[in-house]
Image (cartoon, rainbow, N blue to C red; front, side, top):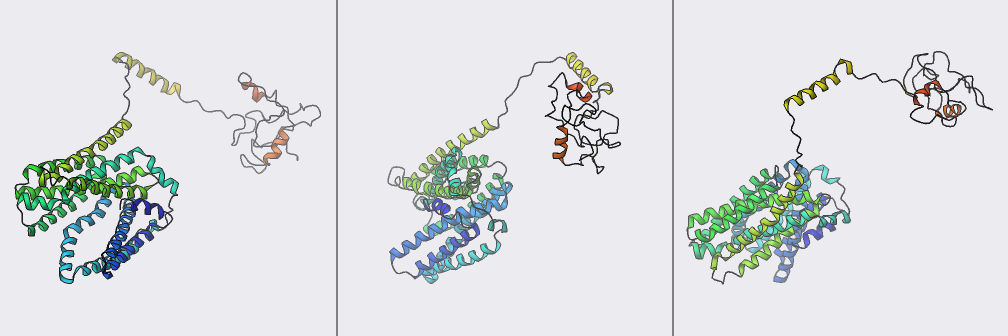
Length: 466
């Protein structure tokens, strides 16, 4: 799932998310059917690869669907509910799978998983939000733009290191419980069930906290995972303490999964599907690399506590990109402090008196005079007609006639700002000499005089004749 999740996410851009989810579940079911019908280990291995491809696709696309359906205010909570399925698989799926395998053979387990995947495909196709069916998917270029964001790489690095740290300890928990703690092999599944219960609680708790401040719970759970892993080294000789710490490891470890993906989707901007797919790749890459590194310490002087030491170191290194993200957020949200001069009480009273004097009755806002070309009814005779200068035509041009009596700035139809066509008005205004118009007297000191070829806009024509 390290490579296939982002690759398939890009390959299925033009497909609706509903169809992609149902298709992933169908491929998941087909893979289990192939494994159940095969009699060759090579075919079973190929079927497991197909199952892994479908699993990565479903988790990446399902994360986007869950967060978008819940909205930004409940994205982490929705992701916590989705990741609760992994916790339920640990709590109930592993014991049930073992029981089915013992009752009907290993093929029965594959048949049961294929049937459950088919039922899940029907449920998802029925209850997916309608908005997801009509959503337009962005282009490949816009999806790849997520790789240019530095915050995305910081989230992926923190996810890989912290997740790999606690999963390295979980992968080799059986040698620690049997060889160092002294727990029998028959009781190990019960301890793993406790880990699953803790993971179920952790995903929901951190999901609720992550909706308010997603980065703070990420840092808190990472620090808690480091502390739990470090405490497992000296306290692993006590069965009671070891069981409690394993449960706490499930709370703190898998709680990260409900925070990392919504953060990646948020930083991905226009590439939510690829951001979620990259988070899935970071999960699996961290688990693979750190687990391999932890396995090499089993034959050293650390013994069964080697994976816990390696996991604590890796999870501690994962805090570095998280602290960098926190510093970037604090710098971006910082408001510069402006130092103001000290003002004594007398000066403040004087300023208040001046403000009251300016805003008092004597300094009320003056009424705005209607300017040239202002729309609206104007009483006849209240101001000179600024559109033309009757009686003084230009050489070779007819004189402009005054507006009809009682027009008062209205058009022929009696409505303000309407009447003749604007082109006719401009054509008639071009024949008027408005350089010496009385309405332009107040403008002489601020701008050039109007020329005959640059008339002032009017709501009524210069004359009433065509």
